[in-house]
Length: 138
Image (cartoon, rainbow, N blue to C red):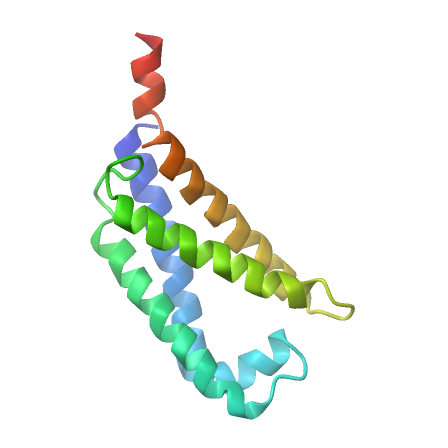
């Protein structure tokens, strides 16, 4: 897989994950938050909607940049934004996911966010997948 296609696939996956989560939290945070994190008060709905706004903004950024090669010096602001978002999301959901009785979907979300954080960290440190390894083999 060449660098442009792998960048496109990663960026489109990220945009879809964030858009799905953002839309769900925007319109149903009063239902989702108590199910994901038991004991969440209904007054936290506005916090879910604020998270949705951030996720939708980054989803839009990812979608608009989906055809560009990202990694290394290419698209660094986008890579850093995604890395920070997924790292904070993984750590934030990780703590409640480790408690007894946590819903399995919360653990799944934590793993998804952690995996995407690792992908964007690799892109930041290594560069566009395939581009730097092809240069080293010459």
